[in-house]
Each structure stands twice: as C-alpha cells, then as structure tokens.
Image 1 (spheres, rainbow, N blue to C red):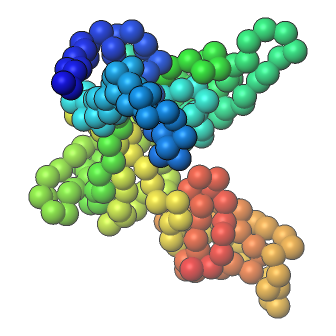
Image 2: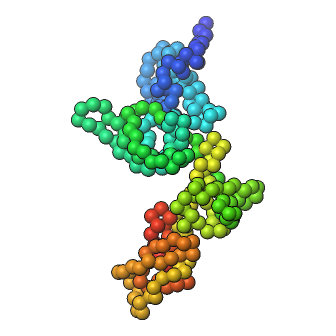
Image 3: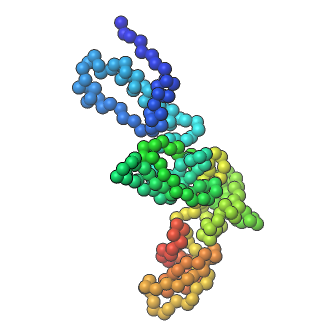
Length: 253
C-alpha cells in the first residue's frame, strides 16, 4: 500500500531563513536520479525538500509586498535596495576579502527620499531586501511656477515635482522630453532623464575658421541654461548631443 506523505509547510519555511530568501534554487538533475537506487529515488525527505523549494519559489514570485530578497553577493551598480525602511540606489560597490576575518561588500548608496549619499558595508552572503522601485514613462510638459509637470500620454494624468525634487537635472530638462518617473510604495521618489539629450547652443565664442578638429574646447551656454565645453568649431544655433550622466559634449546632432 502506498504511504501518505504530509508535512507542515510553514515549519519548513521557517526552519531555514536562507531557503526562504533565495530566489534561485537547484533541482536535482535527472541523471543523478537515474543513478540512485530505486528505493531511494523518491524518499520522503527528497519529496519534502523538493516541494518546499517549489513553495518557497512561488512565495518569492507571488509575494504581495513586491519586495524580493537578495544576497549581498548580488549587489551591483544601479540595483535598488531597501535598508532601514527606505529605498537606496547602489552607486558603487566592492567585494572585499581580508586576510583575516569575514568577507564583506563595501557600497556607496544614495537615499531616494533624502538624497543623502552614504557608505555602508554588508557581510558577504547576508540577506538584503530589494526595493520595489517601479518606472513609468512620463513626458515633461511644462513648468508651473516652482513645479515641474509630467504627463502620462495614455491617461493624461499629471504628476508634479518641486524644484527641490528635480535638483540639478533641471539644466538638461526640456519641454516635450520623455523621462522615467520612479515610484516606491505608490509615491514618486525620483525621475530619470534620457541618457542622451539634444540641446541648442545659445551663447558661445565664435568658432575658429577652418578649425574642424576637437583638439581644443570652449564653454557654451545651452537653451536650458546648462554650460558645457564644446569643440572650437561649434557655433551659436547649432544643436549638440550631451550625455546627462556626465554633462559632457558628445557630438553635433
């Protein structure tokens, strides 16, 4: 008569925090199963472990909180972490393995809410929550007083950001520009500019006749008020491409 297998799922989950917070798991390859004695291929312990892994993976994927757990070994530049109840973006990281003591990950992170940048270390292999930061494409339509108005071109819903929220990004922002607005827990926490923007030179010293090389540079004021260094041959009225991450001239548009 076939035996009946039963186990308490909650006890399996709580018995190993590492198991609960791993989004990746390994399933025993079939070639390994074929090499096992027939009586031990599907032992109760194996089946219990297998279904526990399936449950944990489903829990991670379908978690209503939308917060996923990571290992500190998964940290990389640009990833969003939730630390001390706030969302942070990793700007820099370095895996450190000292001669003595435990390995760790040193990071430099920026708080989306406060804008503060701090350095923080995580023990290697420790569990960290990934912040559920969502991106939605919005178009910057106009400025209303001290507020910047972004519109969803599908629903026509408007989102307003204060000058303090926009910060230095205002020098690259033009009406009609598509941006990514970031949400966390239903609140707007930041927005991302396009990596490359096309802007017009409104003030610059006259170009040198016959100089078409980029051996030298000069400051140029753009239509957004930003000042960038451009090659000597660039003149007023020309459109140029600028990298918003570095603020550097890329080429003529």
